[in-house]
Length: 454
Image (cartoon, rainbow, N blue to C red):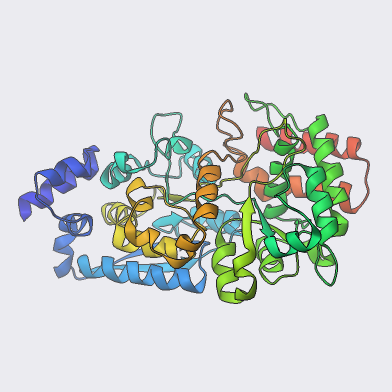
């Protein structure tokens, strides 16, 4: 046992593949193997407590996290894990305070990849190379870790899943009633479909117009779906272009098809609007499937999705994937235990239930999990196989502000830009307040330049 423990310690420290080590240890499971270096904790006087932060904290997800924690703790006597929910909107301030005060979580999950790149660029994160090797690099889908590559040749994080965050959700029953025979492919077709389906207390769409991250992230997608970009591949500000004006004009034209409260919509309100039946279309990730099944089963058989329409069929689709991440702050105690726990999160017995807490929302990044009969047998995954397959493909090709296209350099300022709400400000000033588009875009471009130089 002691020799096994030494081998596994060396594996995590030196970057040797966990799989290669285990081939010499027999058929030991990942959970058991990672517990070996920590076996001496059983007699420790003071237990180790690891803090786990995540904004993904629905009741079903919390239940699965607690199961994972209990299993890890049972295999690692003397080690405790405390889960602490954070906020999609508030995490930049929460983490800024944690880094400043040195009151850091050990593991952070489900934040966008550009957040990991940003913090690593400031020297605040531990490289994740050893954790990725412990999980097994060949277990991932090809290219899954590319967005986490850093300038110094390491990885700042690893994906805990993929999300196709801006799919177009549709009600087939309402489409039939309105005489719409296929999913809209262009903005004109979408606007016409929303017009036909709106009425009787149902609005066409739940687009966000609030001063928040959802509006910023969603509208960035609309600029790309008009053929534009926020930055050029070398990260010069490129927002002042015709596609931005086209996106603003379309977004303005959609305001009348959205509920009055859309002026303050963020993720939760937009999701609820579609799931409740208040809107005929939706814009969200796969959580729609679980929520409809649980909260509004009467429409469950009519729900489907498509990639979000573009300005014309000549413009390629663009899907927002925030690449939900796992990363580890640099200045923490108990680094070995922390890395063991980070790798343990991908153990199939815990990872599959975690994904299935919201089936189709966070999609697997490990090939072995996507093909696992336990994962595929889930009733929602089985019922919506076509939708889940479409989302998986869209997410795999997806991008975000930190990685706008394959030609772009990683944008280490993406986190600050989203946190500033400057893109949402553009939407509010032009669409809601009626300010001159040309002057406002010029002002926003200057703000982006300042943020990039800060």
